[in-house]
Length: 302
Ligand SMILES: Cc1cc2nc3c(=O)[nH]c(=O)nc-3n(C[C@H](O)[C@H](O)[C@H](O)COP(=O)(O)OP(=O)(O)OC[C@H]3O[C@@H](n4cnc5c(N)ncnc54)[C@H](O)[C@@H]3O)c2cc1C
Image 1: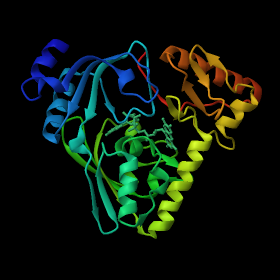
Image 2 (image 1 turned 90 degrees about the vertical axis):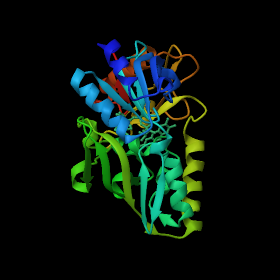
Image 3 (image 1 turned 45 degrees about the horizontal axis):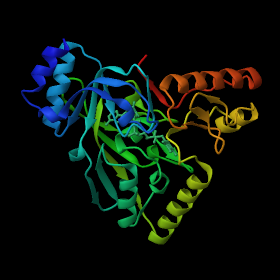
Image 4 (image 1 turned 30 degrees about the horizontal axis):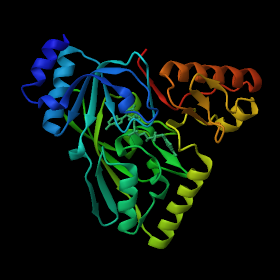
């Protein structure tokens, strides 16, 4: 099936944009993960539409990759087609107090553009190492802010290659979730509405948040940020610390000593070590406090 699919792709894609058995450890912030069977870098909506149709016709599984900063791919890899949006999808345009940006634009870049334009509302996003598309799927947030507060409209592509426009009530963003977690759309562009602000105050907030991240988070190690969601009424990191799991390790996977909410890769961790460690953490926290931790990190592959 893949041989014929790959041959079909060469009619409208350059060979260098089609990779076979691409190691996912190169594309995830955890720096782990086996090969994706097919890895496609896409440079235009036209080509993306053709890929979507080809996938649908052949019933092949696919996954849209953002910046890989919330992703744990198994050591066996992903037995399907990975779709990666190239730089052509990373534009950032400002009109008055509105920003329209491509899904591949880094959240940091969009937040800096807002600062340049003296717009407030995206300060929280400056230090989140994801793309705008991945951020919208996850409703990324920090320090009291989250994308749901500013995103007004999303342009996406469906499985038939059609463009769909989703309004605020349709993308249903909640705590680290949105409709895109279950609907197979590829996000192309995100529109945000911000407010005029004072650039000194905007920069001040960004610097304050950056300082807090450097002080509190183990940014010196590969990770996927907070490994678990915040259970209602608790903090995952505190529960893990109180369960005596600070520094708890499985191979090179470790509960960070600096911030127990982060699982880090100390060097050569495997996905399986990280998964085992996460399972142990869930089990011990449940045993001690009766609280069920749920991964925030997206697990992909067997
Ligand atoms: C050090 C560190 C700190 C972090 N801090 C925070 C934080 O403060 N707050 C927070 O919320 N998160 C944080 N994260 C987690 C992560 O950065 C966010 O979840 C981010 O929004 C993920 O974006 P991404 O582009 O990396 O998405 P990926 O990890 O690549 O993908 C995440 C999900 O989005 C989907 N996706 C990506 N792009 C598209 C698209 N164009 N169309 C459709 N689906 C798409 C993927 O299929 C996947 O389901 C942190 C991570 C790290 C490593």
